Image 1 (cartoon, rainbow, N blue to C red):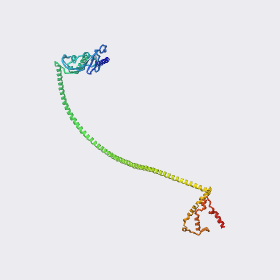
Image 2 (cartoon, one colour):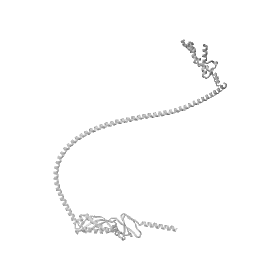
Image 3 (cartoon, rainbow, N blue to C red):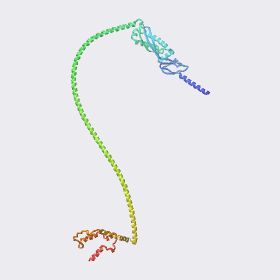
Image 4 (cartoon, one colour):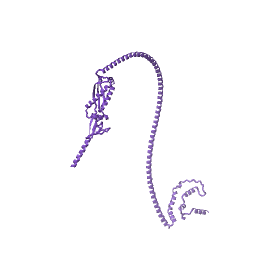
Length: 462
């Protein structure tokens, strides 16, 4: 608890010290001068400074060893009505005037103000400045003539300002403005000077008016003369000028009309040329447009035809592909069917041949194992069928319907009709040839070979 109280006290002391220090930091307003006095350091000469002046800033005021005050920069207006001031001509005059002064912000002059005006009020400063102004104003009046003071006010005001400004700086003030309202004297000298100047001005004005009137009359007569001469000359020149101008105008009109006609001709020709060119360009544009339109229509039609042909071609290709696929499938089906049929026929033929081979083997076996005898047995079995086929070949020939023209020519042995019938019978393959074709020999009980028969016939004939 004691530690907490101690810490609190220390904090309060530190906070109070900071507040006190911050309260000693003073800022100087723009309409005042901050004057710090006490231990403010030393000046340029090494002596201790009496005060430190700050305008438009801020400074820290050390407690105990330093203090501060403000000097007000508000302008002070002082009415100075100087009376009975003795001029250089020993004529006393009155100079009513008004002076405006204020504390100076110049570095050295501020130091004077801090040393001489700090602590004084505005009224006290005003009285002090008023005394200085009175003295300097009397001094300036004593060094100038009344004529200079009355006529050359600028010189008078410049002398007053210079003297007063120098003395005011000694107490830290500066002169802002001087305004002298009027100057007069007790003896009426200034008024007399004014009347003399006024009378002189009036006489001069009257003389000047008379001279001006005289000069005006003479000038008026001369002006009238000159006017008449100049008017006549001007009229003559005007008439001549008018005639010349008319000639010039006529020539100008003729030239203008000629130029207008030429310009009109050129413009008309140019218009016709441009119109012809515009028509030609229009025709060319229309021709180009028509060509482009025709090309567009042709391209459109070609595109339509090509597109339709392409579509039709693709349709035909699709239909052809579909038909080819169908044909392929149908051909494949037919091929498969043919293959199956032929395979079945082959199996059937194979089976038949196998059966025939089996039967032929049995026939060979029945013939005692001799294949030739087996073949003869098979031909003997088929002989009846063969003879039947030969008979069938001429079975349906109607001999009574056959007309044979017999010329009686022949070989001396047979007639043409007999030869016809013999040839007809010879068209039937002989049995011997059939046996020969089969590689067999006709049995003897069926007949002998032809050669043998021919030999026998020849033997019998012989």
